[in-house]
Amino acid sequence: MVRPALEQVWDWLGEVPDPEIPVISLTDLGIIRDVAWDDDTLVVTVTPTYSGCPATSVINFEIEKKLRDEGVGQLRLERQLTPPWTTDWIKPQAREALKAYGIAPPIDGTAADGVLAGRISRLSGQSNLAVECPRCGSTKTEKVSQFGSTPCKAAYRCTDCLEPFDYFKCI
Amino acid sequence: MAPSLSDVMTPDAAALAAAQKGEGRAPLKAGSPEHDLFTGLTRLGDNCLILGHRVSEWCGHAPVLEEDIALANMALDLIGQTQLWLGLAGEVEGRGRDADALAFRRDGWDFHNILLVERPNGDFGQTLMRQFLFDAWHAPMLKALEGSSDDRIAAIAQKAGKEVAYHIERSADLVIRLGDGTEESHARMQAALEALWGYAGEAFIADAVDTRLAEAGLMPAPESLRATFDETVNAVFAEAALTRPESDFAHKGGKQGRHSEHMGHLLTDMQWLQRAYPDAKW
Ligand SMILES: [Zn+2]
Image 1 (cartoon, rainbow over the protein chains, first blue to last red):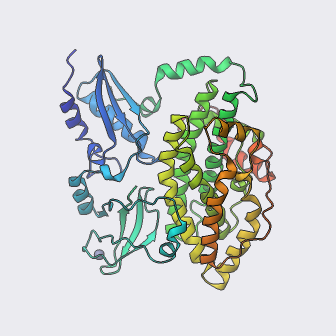
Image 2: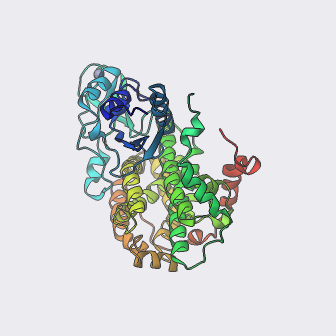
Image 3: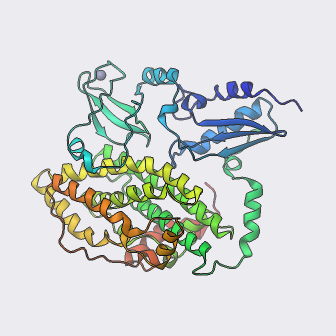
């Protein structure tokens, strides 16, 4: 059988939209970790965004559907946990797409680290993140909740244009 | 032909078949390294599962919409982590039980979660305090597990640790805001702390299984996490104007399968569908 070139496979996967945020693709999101041939079987290695992300099974389904539609007969999906997914892997063009879609993109290097004791004063005050409102561009925004519509987002509100919006948390 | 959703979700068929062949295998021998590891993993998974279930009970009932959504998302993280820990536990056991089988077909005495996580939700303050006390243990536990001699454990801990870092930010933030809030919110948070403090210590008390797992470098010694826990809770309580109870007396037994009366009610609710219709698919 003819084995499509791996670049071609990457291009195909780049056409599969994320089921929850359809303006970015699975490759934009950085969750496809590897594509390789094992004899005549195409092996796609995927890393989950969050362990409980309900989109994970839908993502696997979409990958399989796309590749089968393109004529790939033998296919295996593998899950890879390490290194764990990070928002640093979201591609630059996807960050612009997120903003245009109304979601503030992650601010790299601001992930929570679980070590609290030194940052209590920060916790008791307002968030020190200058998250830009995706609607009007103002940085006069405030966190409403650490968890937004999905685990990967936080709920924010703009105090200039008064619109609520989602912020894609850095992880 | 388009694949069906359940086909795609099925893990490696060969691995599954091999595992299923082990179904008739004898149970692991108590005291053996495999049994210790299985027990340690179910302790981790059961904590996430039972707390995840408790938190999910709030869905549609939280005081404000944002908190309702936040609670549902936290529950989701915890159930996701449960799948990883119990999935590995089933693999270690080698008797064909996957995460679902372990979650839905075990009886109360086979669950190894600490008593804290099965405490009823109470009011929003009690739910938050329970979460904060759990997170203050969970975060350093996962950090320590990243150094496990078992790569599979280290991988799950690394993944879960990133999520739990946000859990503790949220729970600490809210404990401070409500503790140092109105007279009413302060009184409720102090009452919640007093009601739950006696359940915070169990996670730090080692039994023989913990000791052997620590000696093997698989999991940290429970008492080694106490200093970080104390540092975190003391700093947050000070900021929240809450008084830490004097006695560190700890109720225990959950890790060994001796649970409170609440556990049976919780399991009845959580397991009834899979018990009534085994292997039912969504
Ligand atoms: Zn705005």
